Each structure stands twice: as C-alpha cells, then as structure tokens.
Image (tube, rainbow, N blue to C red; front, side):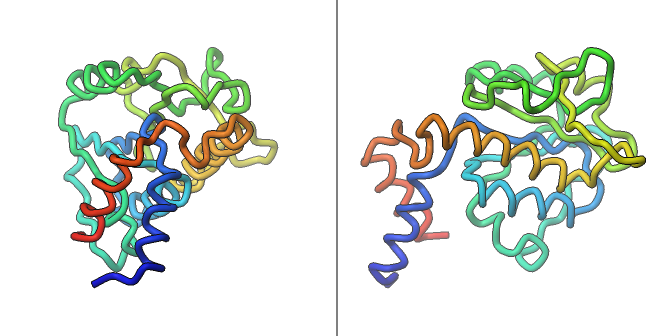
Length: 193
C-alpha cells in the first residue's frame, strides 16, 4: 500500500502533465538518447512520446537505461508517418520538425503554449524528408559556436524547457484543464505501474 506522501507526489506530478505537448522520436538509433529524452519529457510534464520508426528497429528501453522515466511517460509506436500525422492532427497538434534551413524559425519565435508536437530525428541523418513533410513548420535552436548541432537529447531538452518557460508564464503549471476525476483515474493507473 503506497503512503499518503507517495500518493500526494503522484497527484502533484499528474496535475503538471501537459497532454498538448509531445515529442516524436524519429528513427533515433541510440536507446540511451531515447531514454534521456524520456527523462526530460517526464521532468517537463510531457504525457506521451511517439516513436516513429520507419527505418530503424524500435529501441529496447530497459528500466536501467531510462532511469524509470518510461514508467511515467507513455510511449506510442508508429511505423508510418502518414498515420502518425493524421493521429496528431486529429488531436489538434501543430507539428514542428527540427531542421536548419532558410525557412526555419527560431524556437524562441514559436508559441509553445499551443498544442505542439516536436519531431526530433536520427543522430546522423537528422529528420527525414518524410517527417519534414509532416511538419507545419521547421524550427532550429540558435547556436553561436563552430558546431552546428547538439546531441538529439540535449536539443530536445532545450526546446522542451523553452515550452515550459512559456507555459509557466501562462499559468499552465499546474495544468488548469485537468478535472479531479482524471487525476484520480490516472492515480490508480500509476499506482499499478
């Protein structure tokens, strides 16, 4: 039987979950990178992460490598980008792909308080052309050094914490849209994990 303190912590975490902020991991090869992304998603209140694997095998995410974050962040696998795009659009998401191009927008010029899905790509190839076609907009992280990219898990953390900053300013933490019944239903689910 969980203690009252444990149940209070789970309720607090659930109250901060952001169902309208998500990440799409596209063909990320290294399971340690996916695990690091999941840890950041848990820390920032992301409820679900989508795993879009059209070329790579789905990563094997053990409890040790994901530091148990996978227990608290649901992963949803997809093998088809068209089906995933339809799914995200049906949920009202605006889709952003990380891509450095002449028509890309700085992450600091995006309104992350709107329903947002961020596609992050493979460590070597980046976001695929297929995934870029899914996106409503391409985004980049401004950088001022000689290196033009960050590790995929670090880049994801930078973008998610910009979303957190904006959402904090708008009073989205804790999430004012969660009905108490949802919290209690999820609490029971999480206690059984």
